[in-house]
Image: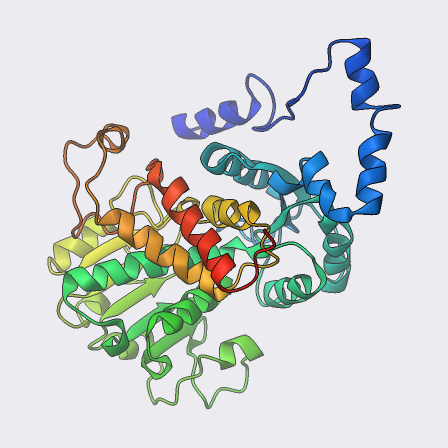
Length: 405
């Protein structure tokens, strides 16, 4: 057993199994405390909430809680291992919510037979929480699940594998292209992968200015094109009217490569086909589509990002989802809309262009860091994310009319 594997197992089992717990927020020491906390005192807020449901935010913790909910059908890059196996990941998500945005989060793993059963389960418990974070649900079911839950729930619903990934990718991509002297609207983009993250990333890049006809998306059968008969409605959105069929065909002269697929699928020979000053996001975890050291040895003119913390430019959802929900909860947003997502993109981008605080350098083990090829996106430990991104999201919710306070 490797040292790191044993460390990970020990971390999750000692000193107490798991990563989260429940803490009290008020006194519970005396008989009077208990009389106020439960019977008979608890009847008073019950009556108030029954008269005016909005007072639930005043008398309970609802307004600072998020449920992290999954069915375990797409756990990390490990696949469909079931709800129970997903619990460590969901507890980890809850840990990140608390660590980075001081949001209390509860993990919920759902056994179900149909998407409708999952949707009904989540919709029926949604009012317990201030928001719903969907996680590790495979495509294409995840699209229907999120769409229906947004319709049925009275709190924000956000599938982080889609939108969190897309927001961080867009922020990093726009910064990388700025450094390379390129405009997104003029770029040819190759997306290797056609699942939830891939489709959401490309949709958001289109909202940022990318041209749909300049995007070549690939699944296991090759390029998604208009003559294919095996495409679901979500892949059809990216069916390109082209004679290109392979990854190599698509990469000739391409400006951008986004990999959300699998390990070691991009060869040096294929990388060499790209246009000058390319941008390569190889985000498969734990092993990217091409290793940064291999890519940079072959193309000194590229900007490289991965999903890993041990390389520069980590595309990491933790830069986004805690602060998206913080901003949404702070104004009791009814939904998380495109305006809020775009605000998060621009807020994340802006932080990268500011001087890096000493504590971030120390935590990163670096003596110097500045906006450039190896710093296109903030580090996760940058505390400015809390204020800047959350505030931008709250303001966008207010301006777009979905804030309740």
